[in-house]
Structures are given as structure tokens and as C-alpha cells.
Length: 397
Image (cartoon, rainbow, N blue to C red; front, top):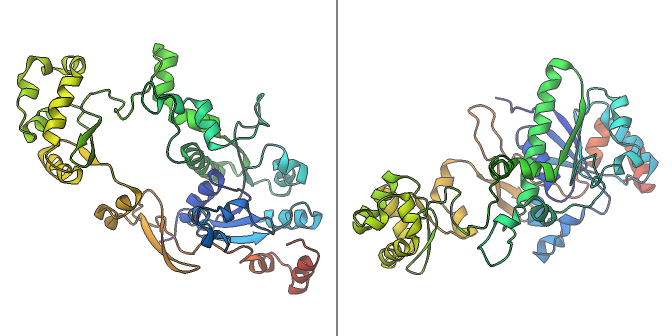
């Protein structure tokens, strides 16, 4: 069974995380993604968190979002390289880039230029703030958008100041938004026959994922504050609790779950005591309730309680480290972790976050080395071996 985007050709000029993460989602689903890099490679290939991998130009964080892609190097400041791009666009379905608005236009390969060559072309530009407005030319990074969007203001513990999320959450949300936007444009083209400009902004994308919090303010005037590890339900038993040698996240959000928690902990006072008779009373007496729960939990470790409470009907989870998370047996059944041959042998990577009954996402080829498919891509576009050799001599590639 073919994958959903088999036959779709994408020229991918994106860099770092948000853009490459987006094209990676489409590559997992069968799109032929040609990643175009400058001859010396993009900076994120050389992220120095792991010197051994960075020295090879294959930093793990770069590989994580570039599997299944082919790689072509071009110096886009060279007019000949621009002509090569225009030739490749003739049979391309999608162009993706995440430069500041106007950069590709100045190179002569922006939407207006390329859509004249190929009217069916879908051109996706990912930027911090989109193509209109006073911030359209402002540089953008994940931390900056976390701060501007309000994400940091509602993350962390009250009194401790704002807190940044532990991963590039705005980049990830933007990348997934862009993948959905491109998918929508591809589908729309099936009944209009027309390509179009797809304008994706990090600021917009992040706010769209914050919609419950935003609308709680715009409609009801509620300004969310920091609630630490408490769930959005604001139930006091949907929070982080101390256990023996660690922490346990309880996700007890309704009356049935609360009674099951109390019974499994063998603490009948949690429902017999008038202080805890209902949710308003439990919120008012949260400190006393927490003391009872943590006293009970102090007798065992987090993963033991996780098993006991889950079996008792009280949702919870031990706080796992990344290495513990990827070792969870549930993942064996979901094909989330996939093994692919890397530059130093087999390596485990993350595939799609969903499954399809037919032709779902999978990692079928390892992340490419710099320029690995240059000759192959240019030959398929009609260039001879002599022409490709001249491009190299002229430092076009």
C-alpha cells in the first residue's frame, strides 16, 4: 500500500527545527523531500552537544528531523544555482522555506518567481510573524515566541517567575501546523488545480494551540496564572505529589477516580471527613488533603504506586526521564521508535505520532550526509555528468 504523499515532490530549503520538522512529517508519509543546503551545510548539522557527531556534520538533533530526505547542496547566491532551482521547480509540488520574508524573493526564487514557472506549485513560507504586520521582518526563535505568546507566563510555579518549556515547543507546534497547512493545500489542489502561497507564522501557530487559555481571557476575562504541575482542570488531586524517593503525577479529575484513589490508598478520611466532601471543599482544604495523600504515598516508590493506583482506577504516572520514557514497553506496540542504519551503525529514531491502517509513516532511509544525492538529483533533472562536474568546479554545488 503506497503512503499518502507518494509521488509528491518537495524542495525543502528549511533549516534548524520548525521547518525541517514539518517537511520530515511529510517525508515519513511518502513525500520525496529534497533538502537543499548550502555547500558547507546548515549550522544545526554541527550542534556541539555531541562533538563526535557534530564533527561528522550529523548532530543527533539534526538527524532527528531529516531522515527519509535526499540532500542537494547549492550556493543560492550563485545565479547558476538559482537557475537549477527553477529547473527543479518545473515538476515539484511543494517548496518549503523558513527564511525571513523577502529573502527568497531577493534571490529570485520567491513565490512570485516560482509560481510563474509552475502555477500548480504550493509554496510554504514559515517565519516568526508571517508576511504582514510590524513584526514581519523580526528574527524569531523558539524562546522568543514562548515569551511573546504567553507560554512562559503560565508555566512554572507562582512566585518563581516565568519558566520556559523543556523543549522547543513553539518550533514543534509550528512545524506540525505547517505540515497540516501544506497537506491542506495539496488536497485543495486536487479540486482546484491551482497552487498557492501558504504563510505559516510561529506566533500564530502557538496561539492557536493556546486557544482554550486565550479564549478564557477574550470571552470571560480570566487571566491564567502559574499553577505549577496542576492540571488545567484545577483539581487538587491532578498534581504532582511526593512519594518515597521521587514524585508521582496524579491525574485524578472526577469523583469516581477520587473515591478510588482514597480507597486504594486506604485513607477513608479523604471522603468521610467533611473537609473533603466535594471539590470546592477539597480545594479549600488542599493543604490538609495533600498531607494525607503524601503520607500514604511515602511508603512506596513512584513506579510501584503507578502500578497499584492504575490498577485501582486512579490515573497517575511516575515522572520518567527520557531514557526511561523510551524504554516503556507500550512503545513496542506502536512503531514510534524505529531503527534505521546510521553513519555509525543502527540507530533508533522517532517516526510518526500516529498510525494508519494502510501506508502509514515510517523511516525508510537514514538522514543524508551533506550533498549525498546531489549527482542523482541533478542527473534526474536532465543535467549531464560533465555539467555537474562544471557546477562543482564553479562552486555552484
